Image (cartoon, rainbow, N blue to C red; front, side, top):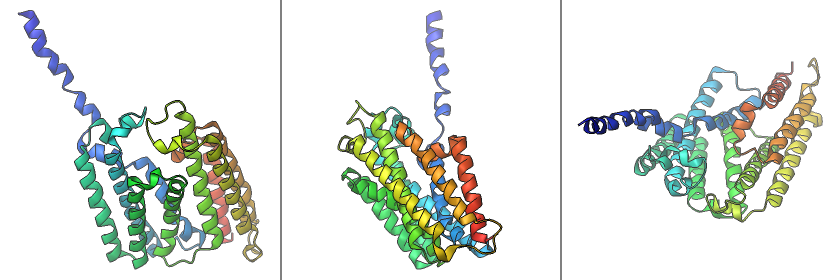
Length: 314
């Protein structure tokens, strides 16, 4: 009789477990990668560089573009996780993602992702210049093609992810009709490639001996090649930034200090500091590296400050 009572009570001890996993909405939000929304802050890069960010119209337009790009990136993450659910279950950390763990059903992830992917460009058509909607649509098409096939093509996968970062930086200028300089595009493009290649390198190092469990393309790259790519990209990004900072036509005359030129020091230090983690193979998530490393965060703050002072010619 006592055994029967205990058997009836045991299931009650397991009932709270689902509440620890969270509900469906929480799972969808987690799948949308809130931590990676920091990447979309790049939409302010062009307006900030041009000194046209701090007006009511500019702030409103940039905030709207940030939301729309975040919706598009969330749509891509949802579709990607739905497609990769089986592969993610074999990964030591990705197996905890809501779709792979079963907290978010695959069909729900697909439907939510498709809905966001359709609504964001439609909203851009009504609320933003036409080129913003075109770029968002191109981003979605490129990223979905990446999820389906391009992520399995050597070098092209690096180019697609890098282009996604460049699109984030470009869209802010398109939203406010700001011309984009060649140095801005070079520095942004190769800086993005530096982080993308460093992430791939870190993944290859961490998954050594576990090849084939996830991201099968890593078995096609060698760590030596990925190291070459991130080192090359870092060098070109630094060169592009230096040429921008030191170009004759951009030297301020009324500022207290040559902030534009001094910002080169902070920029180079930031690249060198990030390269430490890339070399160790611990740069798997760029946003986590930047947010968790205090010296790198302080260097970044110093660079932002000097860059801003250069823009306003203080």
